[in-house]
Length: 521
Length: 116
Image 1 (cartoon, rainbow over the protein chains, first blue to last red):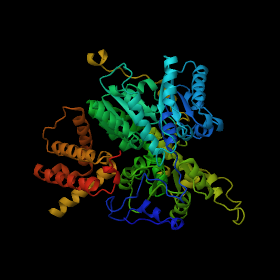
Image 2 (image 1 turned 45 degrees about the horizontal axis):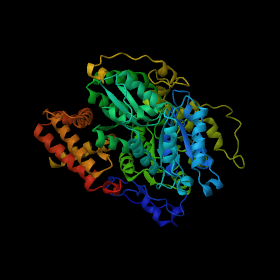
Image 3 (image 1 turned 30 degrees about the vertical axis):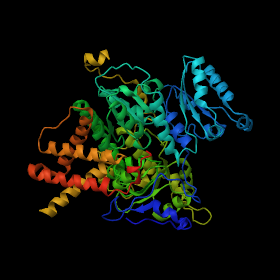
Image 4 (image 1 turned 90 degrees about the vertical axis):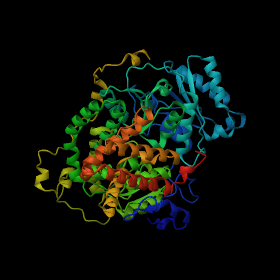
């Protein structure tokens, strides 16, 4: 598996060890990109900082909490809103963001009094909210503000509130991944085991590494509830602060994003003996196997099978409609971390697309082992790419669509490559059976959008046809398909609602018999 | 025969590497335990031998093994007609190959990072 040298990075020879091409018959023991290292000087990468990883990825999806950053206002603004981790309490955690707004004089004279004032003001402004997460930033960390002491002082003065302190300043690691690690460990050290939960089922799980992007968590929780499983907490999407304090009481940790949250699962395993089961919530086959695994653990396979059969029968004809139209399309799978391995194989098998490249902004070598193993031959795998490398890949690989973040996505648009937002989605949720079809629809719309076709025309030199005044996605996608496919009665285009969560939120769940042991706990 | 067994082993390896996650836990000792327990239980299920599931950890390994066996039996029909003695050789080869790919031959420098 040869390392790959980008033309644009020849002046940064160290970069060569961060990219490989998966050759015929080769595997991850032949070559593996370096990973989770400091970004090489001269390479402007697409990473976030450790504060962002702690706050934006893991802390702020918690829904019933004031999320306060102790630092200049830009830190909190740049870690607000964009990830669309919604919640079922009217998106409280997305609507508001809080910063102490440190200034030059605070750097010189200290900002602890400013922090205390802000905490008190925030609790006063939102009197129903009694929980807070408090984030260190580079500025407050460097001047040595003792935010733990301030939090303790407030909790003594206001015994009804509880504050979690996260010491993960921006410089605390090579990328946002350093922050994921820090907040995982801080949460279990400070908060787990401090609340006694009400146990209502014989089958109790924590759902870990799930951030409810456009409702992913609610889709998965719906399946678990239909199986009679109590989801004690979700770490952290749509999760409740006090539920997460009781993580030690679950029977099983079901882990989705191992990149950002395996740390707390590993600690729960060591400290409380709770096992970790890694699952894939994306794609029909991986999701079905995942539901079945969780059910097997509890001995309730029949309940999982009923869901798998019902959902597959309902949604598979829709998935196959898109598969016929996406077959052979080239995609670049360029997310932050875990989605490169969640999607690399299943998107090829179930949607028929060819993954020509995977990259990760903050993944570790373990993520590359998973991602490269799941790719087909010929894929170019890159760690911590810079913008010029991404441009070079798009120009040479000529993908039909890329899945990445909004900043590299905007760069892609400028060279007329359509992109889908891998972090925050377009028309999610993308997890679950219906969600996977919605993802297929988004890919289809990205590739075949008539507007995108128009953007390919260079009005400064291309001749503009006046013949084709009207086009639709379907006119473009079906032009080379056989009538057997276009007229099929079994294949169905997706016609689901814009908001597919409303019905889930109203659903009533079956009551299963629960043992006296569970009820009395 | 040997070539046939090697080819069959590689089919199972390819399935695990593309469909499973358990083989890639982030610590070396954890990968050893995962490979040993999940593939050990896989062999026992295929050979219809008793499987230990008294602890939560065992139940987890067993759940992974059951789903793996189901996938093997559905995708690789030849496994359903194999003798137990051959299944044991097959899974032994599979474990050796998995140990190489994920532990002994792994280029992942983080597996032995003491600062984790």
